[in-house]
Length: 351
Ligand code: SAM
Image (cartoon, rainbow, N blue to C red):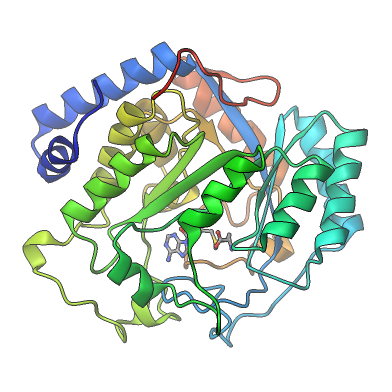
């Protein structure tokens, strides 16, 4: 039986080593039983850091005038794709700010070419693009789409994620559209956002299960001083006893609970986790429910500029170095690198 909101909240409030150990063991057993020992590697390509949004937490916000902007050319993208194929990764994840300079037809052409000339599955993470564009990309062959709903608390969401003028910012509605279009759907939240309560985080996790997500990305919120939330200029009011901490342990608690509510989902051990613990963050995530890693294949000159938050892990390692480092870390855990696209596999009828 999946845990209720009350049970999830109670787990989130626990801090004792014995309770933690029990939770890690349960999550690891559910992971093993449902998705096995394979760790799927997805090549992450950050194709543009240009963004029309003004999210209060994110360094790519259009309000951040310090950041030098880039957009990769088709030629640069295909250069990276050949690397992804040669490394044996089964998926390319193309991520960007919400950048309308990335025209829908241009990206559709790239997706079509990837599908025709490589064995790669295509995951997109392009923000809140209109339905017609999401449809065009799906028809061109895109398999999956990632769009975190960031928090299910409507007041907090409105404060940190302003809508574009004259529009609504309804990520849940877009996630439903993606599902209707036949995408594998991924979502998730940041952990420890200022103003995030234990109750609202428990609701987020329970919602992952009800949405029957195929992929769930969760990671600690890391303050970026060049943003209103990270600089402290925006301070959502909250009882300090209710504030979720953005700690490493809390991130593992959320990964583990996510595995319990979404046993079949693909769950990455994220870069944000590797950033707060460079030595073993990724491995601990993988031992506590995660089964995916997204090694960065963005050219180094652009990777430095995709500055969502400062101090990101693996900023200076080439794609080749990342591949070798991850292979060693995964083998040391007694796990193996997954082959093929690594799509969600449904084991049983889900509610
Ligand atoms: N534009 C796309 C979107 O909004 O979904 C993709 C790019 S966006 C930068 C990817 C994710 O980065 C967001 O969904 C958010 O959860 C995460 N992110 C942004 N700022 C962050 C921060 N300060 N700490 C941790 N994660 C952050």
